[in-house]
Amino acid sequence: LISEEGEYSDSVSDRLVLDTQGLRARQSETSFSYGCESTIKDAAGGKISGYWWDRASRLNDLDFKNISNKAYSLAMAQAGPKSVKSGKYDIVVDPNCASTLLNPLLSALNAYSINQKRSFLIDSLNKRVFCESLCVIDDPRRKGENGSRLFDAEGVSAVKAPIIENGIIKEYFVSTYMANKMGIAPTISTPSRPLLLPYKVNGGRDAILEYIGEGILITGFNGGNSNPSTGAFSFGIEGFLFRNGKIVHPVREALLTGNFLDLWNSLEAAGNDSRQCMSKIITTLAFSNADISA
Image (cartoon, rainbow, N blue to C red; front, side, top):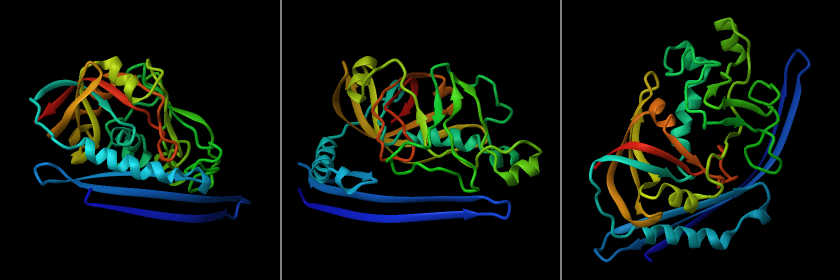
């Protein structure tokens, strides 16, 4: 172990929204967070870092001790990476980075993106675009969780509602401004707490690794880009090769490429291990036949 760095923060927010039509909306929230980065030196002299963090609305809900232990374990697990051959792999995506794959879908459902022709989900409302196993709801009023909210940026009441239901697009995110510009009904400006529902596997990452059997576990994305108009993407990844449901070795210098439409239509499983401290409540995900370049 070379070094360990911890950072703690807390905040109190109080927001009041008023308008001339009689709206009065107020929300107060406390937030406490702690993150830790551990850096180790491996046998070859290389430096490897691991990071872990947690956030809660109550100070007593933070598990300070296990945060630093987790960061150290993540650094140790990355020692001795190996390259893999390019090809088609089943992939499992850790919930800590899975939002990288969901965010482009939510952005494509924004009325501004649709109006600017920068969305691969134009004319998809009430149509089945993804596999029937994909269900995403907006669950904004989760009591006691950071990120929950009573209203959106315009003061519109935040309520539990489907975004994608059995692969069918159920809602666009339409602000008042965009509604007037496009001549459509307003909804909400952005989703508050997107929640991806479990599918096939009643368990977390280990259960999904066992269910899939063999492939690549992705634990982080290192740069890359995506085309909002077509859905094409290319992301650098870090993670592990696994066989028979067990991790074999870390993976280095690999690239995940494809199209979000194809990727989300190949969803094989979604667990029940989402982290409540994150703004998007996404579980461990599994996809089939993903393109990995090494």
